[in-house]
Image (tube, rainbow, N blue to C red):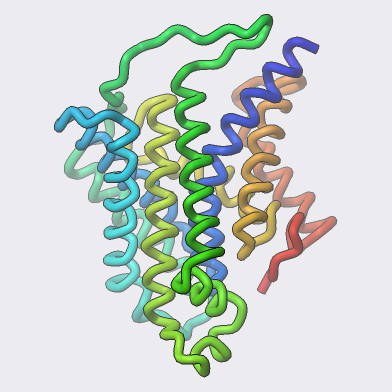
Length: 287
């Protein structure tokens, strides 16, 4: 029982972090109708942008998170404008494949400038906090809080601002939104900027708990994709639910599997949700 509760706690912490880039991926899907796999590379962009601010310029990690968001968002808009926007109108499969090419180019660029060796943020080593038989790392708690704040701000933006409501209108029906005077291209750029910015935050949060290298997003993208699919592609609340579900599932799998096989949970979750509920838990659109 003690191990089960500890894994549930770890899964909740990991799931909240996972939900942040999953929201980014699902936001872009909702507006542009294709899965942009370059989210993985933008997680790395955010991780390294935060690294430069934290390790080189000495900013505290919570402040460097803002740089991760802005850096990944700016690169996301630029890479979309150059590599993917000219392909608008092509099939979703074509755009998804093109996004993989963009992903490889961005990761290679990061490797060219920073090399492939792991790097650590300039954060102090701290002992775990103990609550009875449960223990949790201070960095885990900080990452959880940052993830919750990022998701909360996004929900406020989408719910209470005119721009957020316009973005949701474009996600629901681009043609109807266009007839109401909403510029779909502007909303698409905004969705990409925010979505990739959230991916950047997710990359830095993952790096704060381990280390970073150019493949920090590549190693996480399957779990991110699984979270978005399980929750329902195109649904922001679904990405949160999916992130928590995948985080808990991966941790609970340690009851019966070695840590090496934890990644299998993402594949299994995708297969099960496609078989049982193709639209995802919250029933978002699938095409």
